[in-house]
Length: 337
Image (cartoon, rainbow, N blue to C red; front, side):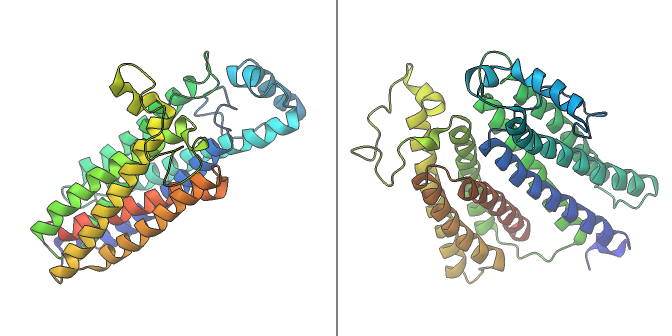
């Protein structure tokens, strides 16, 4: 038995971490819906302690709507919007922030309980404290992202958006890793698979970041075809910006092109990881799941593109990225020498 499981509270702590990870997964989905419905800039105030409740009467709704009318998004894009339309987008941003508060409470209260009652296994106090701090920083990063769309542009910075999603996925992965470690899940050590898995994770992270750039720049709304982009594989306006390297980060067709081919490369690497495991007769169950998930994820990505970024498909695509990362985390944990 793993030494941590000799601690009678270890299973409870592991279950708690898995539960918070599930909440973070829901939060990632809600974040996708908030972005896809263009709701993220509807709340122009950041009131982390007293902003839990939405407006409860008409006077309060008028106040927040008047604040929204002063934003670039309203003045340049949503000037047609009435208060009932505003309420619909306000809901998703409010719910997104509410989920953030809920996750904070769901993590902080049990953490301090387990800490004060000395039930956290040795070696995990600082790791779990780091997650608490990271969660607080994520809230600040979310507001930093929103601020970028309240000054002179009707959208948030795609760099800040990708950072916000990246930290959410980091928290999600660390919750799963620590839950597995504390629970003492059986491992299948394999140095070769472990190294291969790390290479796979690197490509997966790059694909996710360029996916966030694609989302932040609305790059999925151009070249809604596959595999071609216009008359060829490479879009004709691939090198529109100077210097050339900036195209990969800020030129809409180039960003979509990069995400497309990173995704295909990542899928190929995942399938070689699966083949590697089968060849060595060490295909643990998460590797089979990973191969299935990446097949579905590529299909969702193509379907999202061809649909002109249908909200349901795009949300499922972001959820798929989180599930791939969770499965990759489990593989790294189980194959670690």
